[in-house]
Image (cartoon, rainbow, N blue to C red):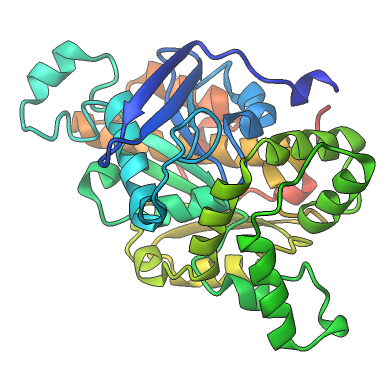
Length: 363
């Protein structure tokens, strides 16, 4: 497997305790003093999933990724009640409190000076990036002040706020009725059957379900490696949550500047979800459609996802910094963000709407 699809060595690892005692594994990469980016992965994945994107951001950013509960190196709760959108929000809140202890307002306890003296990250706001269930996590936490105060902007990639069974296209419509398709799709979500070892057949089946036909052999192999590592019971428990997902109200409460990204060939969360979310969001700043790509957009086109993150960082982390200081961002800080984004100074101060479709893909 080529380098882009190998694990990135973290600069720091920590274990964060969520509200119910679940331990969440967190990894940090890149510049300790860089603008923070927080990555939240989807169903059946782990921090490894983000490796191709992390590689494109570490030179300029402080990148934080964590394993959702029941995934990777985080705790595997035994009780079914420990799996739900509230728990997803709890975990994200705990991670943000740990990696950005001062929050966006210099300290939730009101003692901003003390926080600033204690932590180099106090007062920072992050760009939150959620793929699939990771995007649902950000939606679920939208009403929480501790999350909102630490958020500069959001990227929702290949995700939806509800009605997943009715729109999923893994089983083509021509083969059965809508009712049968819903039943089959639900069974795919809640099944406890083990995936077993990665074989050419299982890799091909997974590629059909979650990736575009044009995805590379390395991309398909990497996806299989990540997904097959998820335990069957935890996969099933989270599948039950996704089968009845309803986060429309939470989506409408997501007030941070938010970009929505989707592959036009996504079978799990088709573009209808992206368009619906873009219309419902209070502050949707971009809708990015990646032609011909499937559900695993951060793997299938890491360059496009990284470019969307850089655009949000250049515009909204600079704006957050200006708000915190009560004046303009320093020339040095603005220069760092503009250089990281790869955009001219004037564009960095506007609502950048990037046409990712025309961006040249790098190897």
